[in-house]
Image 1 (cartoon, helix red, strand yellow):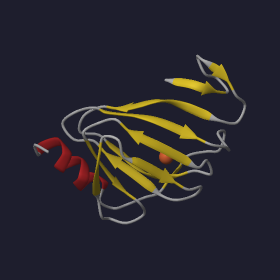
Image 2 (tube, protein in one colour):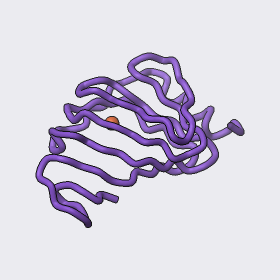
Image 3 (cartoon, helix red, strand yellow):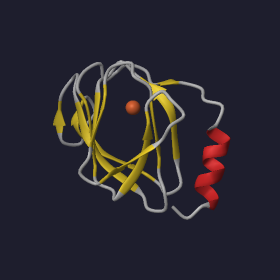
Image 4 (cartoon, helix red, strand yellow):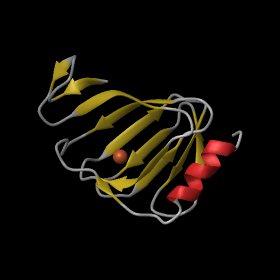
Length: 116
Ligand SMILES: [Fe+2]
């Protein structure tokens, strides 16, 4: 849900986004980057993140994730849905570029079968 931005349901802004972002349980939001600098305020108890490597790290509710412009990042969601506040500070119309990692199938299989 976009609260502030070009097509927001709340406040219009041509080059700034703020909203609520959710992902379903056991989801891999695949590695990607974009020219928009991005901030997440994590509201879920636990979510997994990696930043251009194969190494994952879990972050708790209340943690902040800062993705500078062009920096790769990916998110994995465990048993419970992931919910966050997200902000794109500028370049909100820039494309999202998928960055291929060869372990996507493995990560998705692990999320599907393991209690996390
Ligand atoms: Fe992103």
